[in-house]
Length: 163
Ligand code: 4NP
Image 1 (cartoon, helix red, strand yellow):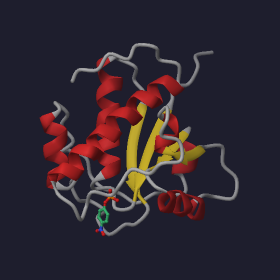
Image 2 (cartoon, protein in one colour; image 1 turned 90 degrees about the vertical axis):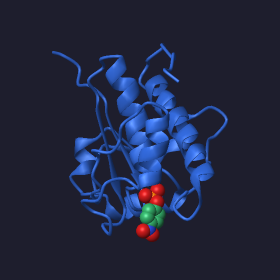
Image 3 (tube, rainbow, N blue to C red; image 1 turned 180 degrees about the vertical axis):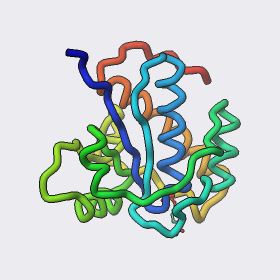
């Protein structure tokens, strides 16, 4: 029987800044390796449901060759905990929110996104929403490091990046 492909969901508060960048960075790395993994993102809150990513997030991703303009925000659903193997929160509040939204029994591995990055365990991805373009560039770098950490987590050994 064929093994099921990994499925990964990134979670932040609004699903318009941090998690769409991590989603875009990993989708890009997955697509260019032809891996076919399921990658998605969602927010703890639903205030931005249906919205495109923040224009500053779209811009920083585009600067690095990744198009996230087509993503749309949505809120985390209980069904996500069975649809995804790995659910990665951007900060400790997101992690607490995830535990609050999770069904009593589920098999998903829920943890901090930066726990998959060497030397960054326990750290949070800073929220760039109230900052400037410099903050979004830092978020992109974290998103890229997380994407590579996810590849390594699932045993991918080819770490070449486009940019
Ligand atoms: P995100 O950033 O959680 O990285 O998407 C935020 C987006 C929106 C808000 C806060 C954080 N907000 O308060 O609307």
